[in-house]
Image (cartoon, rainbow, N blue to C red; front, side):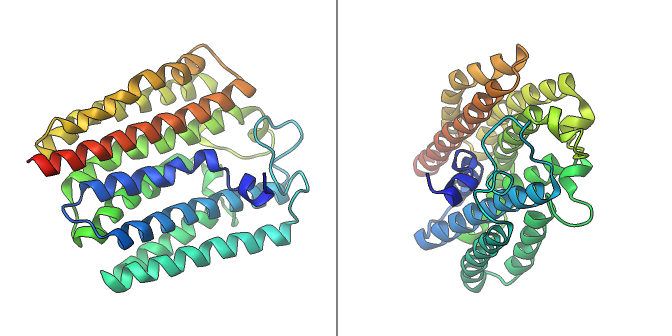
Amino acid sequence: MNVYLEAARPKTLTAAVAPVAVGTAAASTFVAWRALGALVVAVSVQVAVNYANDYFDGVAGVDTEARVGPRRAVASGLIEPRAMKRAIGVSLVVTAVAGLALAAATTWWLVAVGGLCFLAALGYSGGPKPYASLALGELFVFVFFGLVATVGSAYVQDERIVRTAVIAAFPVGFFAVAILVANNLRDIPTDGPAGKRTLAVVLGDGATRQLFLLLFVLAFAFLGVISLSAGSLWPLLALVAVPLSARPLELVRNGAEGPELIEVLAGTARVQLVFSLALTVGLVVGNLTS
């Protein structure tokens, strides 16, 4: 696998695809190039976040040989720090180009939103006070990969705030946070000693596992609220993702550690993707039959 593709952590990119699919489906209109533009923005921002996390944790010495999980490109010497900085820059340029096209077609306020996304991408692991080390990573993921991405994807279609998109943003965000929680749960043994105080480090192993389970419950519970908002039972189609949730939930509940938590992360991403695609279909069919 190409080292840059590996460093982009493709298994986690469902967190970028999901909000665009759901937000676009929640809108009452569909403009294909705007949906594609929103997808490019979301994916390139997440790639930038993953590259920045790899770079900053690598140069800070957070990623060591004791870390369990996918290898990090900078820490393992696969990519030089300077080259990774260029890759971050390229990802953000791609984001900017797609974002400016959407702003020109809708509202220039999207430029301000894009600026906040840039700051969030670089501030996760970088800067004097990375917010990932202030136990704020989950909050920012929920805001940007839940609320902003989902509502924004609907906005570029209808050019207004769509109520159903706002509600649907919550379960999308919960699953994005669950992916991060699974990742940080695995890294508690190495993040703590390195001074990276993630929410998982602050809460501890047991409470972090409870948070993971709660996020799944909340995500599926929100389907009822979405159905009420959409005036249709079709969004409940996303319940097809329930059986896929059994394995990651069982592993976390039974105290899985190390490599087993890699399976949890991949399983959570799979649940989010199936949930979001099924919800997308449900929203589209509900709109067509209402």
